[in-house]
Every structure is written in C-alpha cells, then in structure tokens.
Image (cartoon, rainbow, N blue to C red; front, top):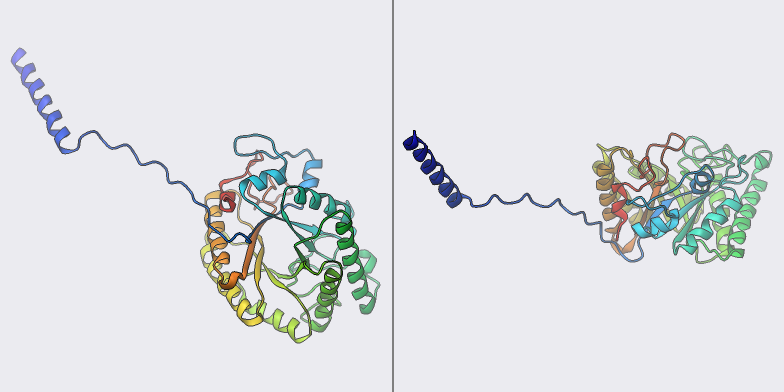
Length: 349
C-alpha cells in the first residue's frame, strides 16, 4: 500500500512540475475595458433638454449622481460633462409649466451652472411636432398678418424678459419639428410655403431685434431624411426666409442607430454644402432600458457631428435625459432610482 501511495505522490509531483514548465501561474483575467468619451471641439454643444425639471421637482422627484448623492440637476449634468441646456417655451399652457416665467426660472439655473442656453419656441400652448402645430388659443381668430405680428411680439417679449433677468440665449428655435410648417392651417408648409417662410422670417427678425448675437435655428425631425430637408429648406430659401442653423431630431432604435447615424451625417454634409449653413442635432433619445446601446449610439452621433468639416457640426442635445418613471416616457437616460445611466458617459470630458 505504501509503495502505491509513493508512486502516486511521485506522479502528482511530476505533473505539477510539468504544468509549471508549460504555463506557470495562470494569468489573471484582463481588467474590464474602460470607456473613453468622444473628443470634441471646445465649442461643441453637449446639451440636454430638461424642460420637465421644475414640474418633476414639484412632484417630489430628486436626482442623484451614480454614487447615490442627491444633487441639483443642472450641477449634476455639468459634472457629467454637459455644457448646454435646451428649454421649450409655450405661449399660455393650461398648467403653467413651460410658460415664460417657468422658462426664465430654468434658464437662470442653467446660466448659474455655467451652461449655454437654447430656447425652443413651440408657438403653441402645448406640444408642437410633425403631427400637430396648433395655434395658441389667443391667436386662433387672427388673420395671417395679425398672426405674423403676434408671433413677432411674443418672441420679443420672451427675449426681453430673459434679457431683463440677465440671460441672453446662445440659440433660439423658431418652431419645433416644423416638418410641415407651424401655426396650422395658415402656416402649413405643404399648402403655403410662403406663409411658413413669412412666419420664420418674423421670428428671426424678432430674435435679432433683441440679441444680434443669438443664432436662430429652423428645426426639422428625422435627421436622416435628406429628401425632407431639401424640400423644406429649398422652399424656405425660395421664399426669402432667414436662419442661421439647421436643427435636426434623431430617435433611432437600439438596432438601427448605426445606419441612421450614417444617413444623418450625410444629410448634415449636404445641408452645409447646399445652404452654407451649420447644423445641430437638437434632439436625440433612445430606449432607456438599454444604456449600453444608448452609449454606443451617442458616442457615434457625437463623433460624427463633431467631424463635419469647418466646424459646421455644432452639437448634440439629449431630449429629457432626467425623465424617469415620468409620464410614460421611456427614452430618458436616468435609472428608475434617479441616477444617470451609462448612456450619458458619452457626454463626458
């Protein structure tokens, strides 16, 4: 029995020696890959539309960093790497949110956080987008000439109110996702492009009358759709409209973002060449339940927009990233416990 045990011990020893000669101590697993956010120009706008923030706060919502420390949303976004804030303006909303007073309150917080500011005029009492461009209730009975005047005077009033509070927006949108114009039916582009162009011109002149340095944006959704953009901006140009920047929205899925990003870049390059106009992606979003895909998408679109020659790709804004468990919106970029997801790492420094 002893001889058998000794033989076994010798065999085991030889095996250990042999294995150590072949491979030595097993190598530790490689560390997890670290993520590096896109490198962009110093002037590139890394933005977020956080127009819901005051309404969320009034409903008891709070915001936290990744370690669970409660923070003011504007300071939190600044610490992540954002440098710009976008805020929508509604004429006379029934609940008050996004009216002029609410806009000014949020813009003041953005300014105090050291952020640039984009004001998004919907020219409506509520949501305006490709499927609806309702006139404010107070403007519904106006003829077209009076409608132009109302738009101009309202725009001047908001800009003046901001100025009185020490705020000068860096950018202003005259209309939100105006794929078929705004202030329907008078300003529906497919039936009266001249009217829509006149409204854009009225808004442009109103902004510049208060702040000549503020850049004016005309905003269309589906940034990948070059046919739509050429139709719209050919029509506006032919009818004497003025703008400084072409704005785009882009909301891909987790499976088609790469293709849509490529098409969006091609569209931007065409807009720059065709109209000698820089472009900005003023709205993006993706399913919050897949932050890894969201980060890949954002890294790619930020890199692509920043790559446009001559510095003509001006920035990317995430639409309502802070929205969590809120009004059924599923394309924010915060967890259900109020912390930023990995998607927002793409806006890092």
